[in-house]
Length: 523
Image (tube, rainbow, N blue to C red; front, side, top):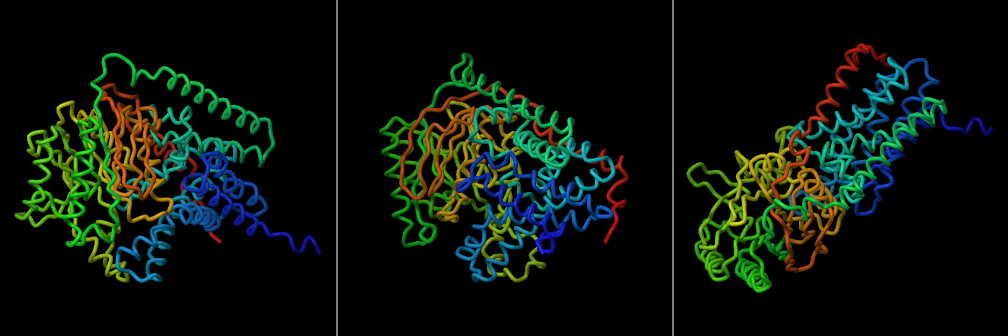
C-alpha cells in the first residue's frame, strides 16, 4: 500500500522543479536571502538527471516542462507585483491585470525551460559529468538571451542574489553579473552531481567549487580592505551630492491642481540641501509636473533657484520634440548659471510601461496600450558635463542593463547616477529588487552610484557595492553625502560581457558537437 502512494518519477521531478523555483524566488529581496541561491538550481538538475534515468529515453517535453515549472516559481515569486501595477495605473481590470502578469511570468519561464532542455540533452549525449561542467555556461547563455530577446527583460539575473555579499560580489568587477550567475550556478550543479552519483568525481567537483568560492571571497575581502578606488591617489575630486526624495504619490504626480505644490516641494527641499553644502543636487525621474522646457514659469523658478544657490541640478522631466512630434523621458543637467548643459533621453524603454510590444497580439490590454505607447527611445548615450567632471544617468529600468551603463563609462562618465520613480510598485518587493540591481553596476564599473527615487529607495553606493546612504520607501527625505569622481577602469569595464559571450559560444559548440536538439526523442 505504501509503495502505491509513492510519487511516480514524473511527479517527483515536478516537485523538485517547483522546489528550485521557490528557492530561486527566495534568493532575492524583499523576503529572501542570498544563501538560497547557492542551491536553488540543484533540485531542477537532479530532476533532469537522476529521476529520468528510470525512463527509457530522455524526452524534450519533460525537460521543458521541468524548466518551465521552475521558471514559473522563480518569476511568479519575484515579478508578482506587475499585476498590481498594470491594473492600478494601466487602466486594466483586475482579472486582465492578473492575466497580463501571468503572461509575463510564462514568457520569462521559457528561459529556464531552455536551460533544462539544453542541459538535459547534453547529459543524455555527453554524460552527466560533462553536462554538470557545462551547466553554468548553459544557464548564463539563457540569461544573456533574456537580456536581448524581445527588447530585453534581465530582471533579477541569478548573480544579483550576491550583490550584498560583498566579498563574493567583488568578482563582478572582473566578469560582471553574468560571471556572478555562473559562480552561483556552479555550486548548485556540483551539489546536484554529488546527490546523483556520490562518486569520487562528484566529491572532487563539490570540493573544487567550494574552494573556488572561498578563494574568490578571500580575494574580495582583500580588495575591500585596500579600498584603493576610494582612498587611492590620482582619482578625481570629492563632491557633495544631494538626493531629493519628494515622495509624491503616483495619483498626484499628473494632477494639474497639484503641480504648484509638487514643484514647491522640490524647490524647498533643494534650498535645504544647498544649505547643507550640496554641490550637485539630483531630483528623481519625471520630478517636474510639466515638461521642463515647455513650463516657462516653473522652468524659470528652477533656473532662478540654481543661480541663487550656486548648485548644479540634475532633474528628470519629460521632453517634447514638437517638430518631430516625439515624446521623451529625459534628464536635464542645469548648470550654475541656469543654462541647460546637457540632456539625456532614455534609450531603453520599459515594456508595458512606456511601450507595448506585440500590440496586435495583446489586444486584450487596450487601455494599457493607450497609456504606454507615447514615448520615443533616445538615440545615444549622452554625457552630462558638470564642473567636477562628466557624469551619466540611467533612467529607471535602464540601470538593469549592464552594457548600457558600461557604455557611459566608456564615454568618460566619472560618476554613475540613476533617477527613477518606483511609486508604481507600492510596498512590494520591486523597489528593493531595483536598488539591489543598481548597486551591482557600481561594483562592475568601479564608480560611485547616486540614486534618486521619488518614493525610494534613494541612496549612495560606493565602487565596492557598500551602501553609504539609503532611504526607506515612502518617506520624504533629503540625503547629502560625499562621492568621488573616478576614472580608473575595472577589468569588467574593459572587457564587458565577454565572459557571457564565451559561455554562449561554449554552449552552442557543445550542442552542435553532441548532435543538436534534433536528436531528442519525442513522446
